[in-house]
Image 1: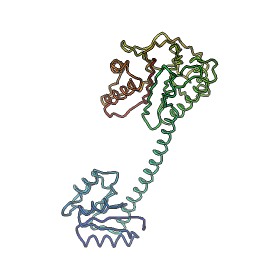
Image 2: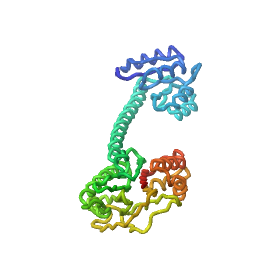
Image 3: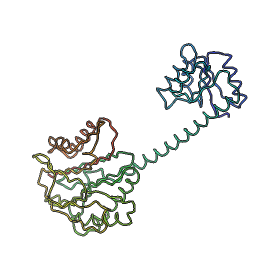
Image 4: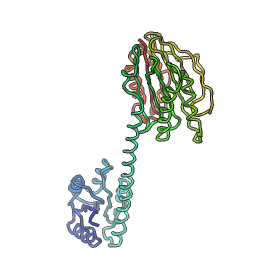
Length: 383
């Protein structure tokens, strides 16, 4: 058992030497010793130990003081077995409450030492194995997050045709999210804009997100004409997502195709939040177009688009419900009223400023409360 490192913390030299001999008889040869709690903490800070055998009654710093100090840094605290007289049962209970794994009476037998130390070391081995697997999983998820974020465009200056400016942000609630946005320059002098939200969270939603991005991009190239009809694009995407959809996953989407020169275009909304129109007046929700089922929910659905016109200076604000449904600790939603109040003073600002203002407002509202949904925003302005 040369790979097991143990630490004895006891103010009695006799007890330390006796315990070290017992441990050597059981094959534990890497055994360090400390005279009191202060030395014990210094030893723990200096190297890794697989288990600490800790006396309760010591000068300078007793066993409870050591456990209280270790509790302040649980990630780096080794397992502890308390060594105590049976008359100190109240203190033993307190030690267990502070995180001690087990205890031994001072008059212990070698078989009892073997059994309890072996059990503690086995639990530590299993915890270490679980921690390593978790670390590998987190590394894989972070890699997946990086790969997912690389799917959405970020060089908006290169994408936006002359006369248009674009900005967007996507903040997954987990390492991998189900929201997406798309900004795609079209050969006919126009631009395709889309925000979509996959049902569910985590890796399954992330895979559907990637599939949806690919379906929309492929459909935009398949649909004829310099400015493809967004309804035709979503019909193609829906055919892919709805086929053999045993998991009943669906994707809400708002897709716009806009002519940069004229500001004329079309919009198709599939079960998604309607965009806001931004200009000198109060922000207002676009109306007058058909509201239709999400992608993947109805195989063969005949999506329809509606005309859209954007005057010079006007902007469009597309977003996912992770914005309006962001929750604070009191379980209040950010809501559309707060969203509209936030948009009003920045309605004529640059798309990048509008995106930044949204993220700041939501962050201030939730005040550190963990996100339950992905947040995605895309803003475009003409002229």
